Image 1 (cartoon, rainbow, N blue to C red):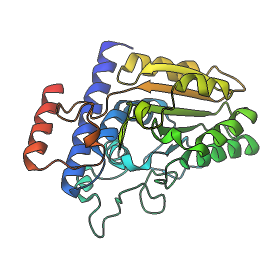
Image 2 (image 1 turned 30 degrees about the vertical axis):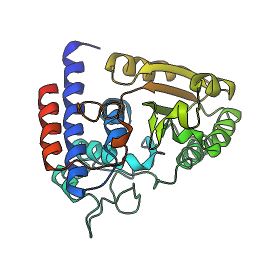
Image 3 (image 1 turned 180 degrees about the vertical axis):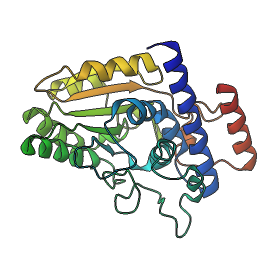
Image 4 (image 1 turned 90 degrees about the horizontal axis):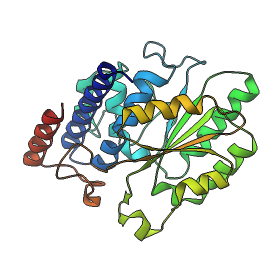
Length: 275
């Protein structure tokens, strides 16, 4: 990736992170930690990788994205708004009474949302169904699903994975946001899903491990997975929970807590420096 393109993506991801902390601060509730860790992957998907159009969000031939870990809706909303699906200022209405931006993604009311999600473990099954439908209908669209590393402790994730590999769904890509923290602490201390890569490989996936904040590695992973036939791909992205905000990084306490006014100002200053 050339320097100009990388810088543009880094700056875009930084603006998306500002949108995340602004939305959660305005709502006085939400999930900033995992939203911040996923921002770079979402930036690459929506600004480079996916075949989508904000002007035609229901295009039957569009690529699909399912946020299986639906509680990081602020990350997806901020990405969609910066991509042009709706006004960035609407992020300030997150979780407010009467707002269409609910605490979890809602496909009936939010432009660009392909699947309502929030009950952990279920989103991947929906994504697998979409990928199978594309195969049965002879369509070329691709399906991407993002799961949390704590979320994959759910058994339904592995049922869906077994089915995806059995059906040879090479149009499906699962991204695991491996920030190593869930609401109760480090994932290897709560109910370890490690080794994650080995598990997906054992279930029949092509597996790629990357630094989820390195756009060169992100780009190569999505380029490489296009060449894989007869297997779904799992991209295991090592990330930092709370990425970009000094006092949130690697702190499980920021899994589901909103910053107060002083913390919000500090977060924006951190992100200004990063930009």
